[in-house]
Image 1: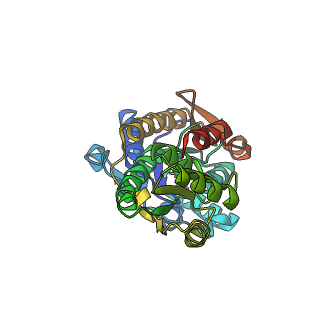
Image 2 (image 1 turned 120 degrees about the vertical axis):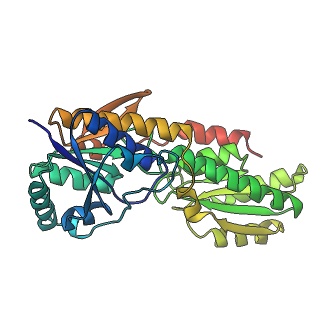
Image 3 (image 1 turned 30 degrees about the vertical axis):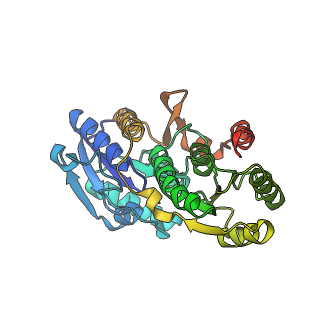
Length: 321
């Protein structure tokens, strides 16, 4: 297959490092004499033909920026085959021979559907939650963890000043990786993740034991999927007598300049995606395994299950107090 034109889009939640991946895809493709179309606002832009032609200068000075210069959105229409076929028609009209999709599992399902109707697609994992099973690492994860750590370090200052317990919610609706690693990095007394669930009795017991030994302030790290941080804070105060306040970090975790890790991994994954499309290979997801950049069939990747690092979770609880 002679690939002359490829497209690139970002879909779902934004993640720091997406711009680094865009830059890598565009420059690698142009070096291979391919034309590159930047699709605006995810699959919505693909269906509506909202695209811009990209050149070397289009991606200058973006590697350090958070967010995505192509913007992102979720597209209900693309969940139906009629939407997929409409996107295929647009791809054919503009001469698009392949597409790079940066996003999460939902974005990859769309890429698989589009591949099945004849438009080769390659997915790049971009999500701060690090919850894509086929890869050890997703773009945005390291930056989000560092942002959470920095914010909690600041919260700790005021918690310490007031002999207070701070219950901090970080992102992770279905995955507790940010909570686990940021919790360890911040010395949290207790970490709550959806993979384990909330054990309020154990949490209270740990706070009370540490308080008896002279500890005056506490950090409780809670993944978003646990929910009700206000209720958790109220229960802690009721059972221990220690003033407790809740803080939801929210979308601050999605923003900010990407770390070195996110910029480098994104650049490697973007280059690999172009190498696949150059050969006419689609229906693949780029991944990192044991530090190497590899790729998987999209359907195979979507069927994989990620194992939560229970050993690390146990370590976190053993060394916290």
